[in-house]
Length: 286
Image (cartoon, rainbow, N blue to C red; front, side, top):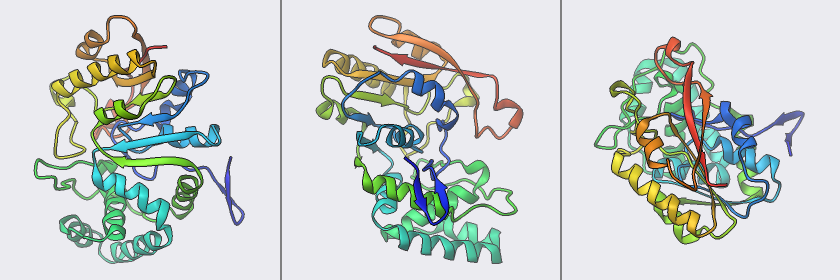
């Protein structure tokens, strides 16, 4: 199902670059999806690569997506409901950035807009122009990534934004801002729940869990493992991505879990030589 705008055919893809994004793993994830399932739930939405794949491949698929990052959730609803105003705002950012990229970037990074449009265009603008396209906030919840070294960043990816807006509008997608545990109230027997949480660090230097001002801790991983067991007992299909770490393996070492080790690259490591040759875990109960 490709959306046509004029003569351009655009398949919707993530509009933000997100740590742990799944675009490169879509073929493997697709192979590991159950043959049939009810509603698709994704409680750690991030860039939404699997969601967009799901909406394209499974026409009419009912989806319930959520994230704890309120600015990210707002971005999805803004692109769905107010795409023209958002594109207009991003074009202003682009124009001002081209005049003086450094001072403009840091002025926007310091800003704290109140309106829905400006909040979303700020998030997308910073994501497109910051170092490595990394979304990270400090303990006070402030975005703190420096300016990236881009000659001509694609700030207004108009075709893709329209395509994302169109598919969110025309599909059965419910979008919420909430903690991942709430999925237990809504998911029913036969539904598919895909968890892609901030990964457990495999080394001291690999600890990146700062998507919101609340880190995803080892205790949160424990909460997640307990939730997966509860979902399994309800008859839900559960699929989980995480790092190839002992903590994760230990938590999911018993039945009903099957663990697959898959090859993955890291798109945001600042050292490009360290982006390849990684493995991660894909865990499921079916």
